[in-house]
Length: 179
Ligand code: AR6
Image (cartoon, rainbow, N blue to C red; front, side):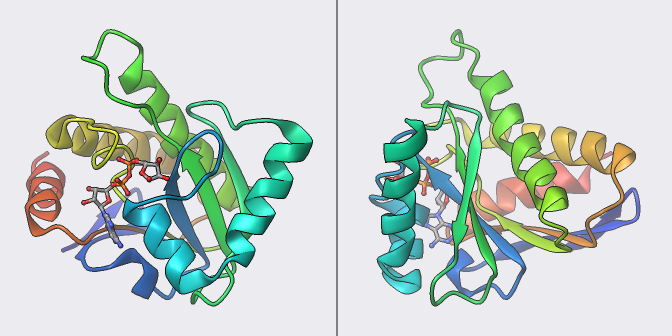
């Protein structure tokens, strides 16, 4: 599915995010940047251990990345220039600012992409896997943040949201299809 939001192309793709050819791939990371399963595991497997090494160096120097925050490493063997590691919230029932923290993780990723002067970015559905964030709320928040961001900043040409799981993909398609 492809739509325009404030003149930016938004593409929803049912695929492995590590197969994308974009300037930056966003990782669904944890605060200690210990890349385990899900998207993080796939990025490490295909991108190479250099991504974990750079992540470890960052944490040693600056400490853990706060929830809602991001940091950047190179992308190793992936078809991208950068990995933007975004730390989404663990879902704990919704009363712990989870939605706000997910908004920050997406917003900070977009802001970082603009600072890096890049044009295309691919997002996973941050927090909606191992971290248990409800998929429909996650899709709503993505749409809301992308709309708000692109109404202010014109730096990006294309934003992709890529999910390997066809159910999650369909939930996003439904959300982005309605006004
Ligand atoms: N490509 C595209 N989407 C994927 C892929 C892939 N290769 N793999 C999973 N998804 P998750 P989180 C989807 O668990 O919930 C790791 O251990 C998946 O269907 O990767 O933020 C980290 O190190 C789901 O919709 O991220 C953290 O500790 C979405 O991507 C923790 O998991 C996000 O799932 C982060 O958990």
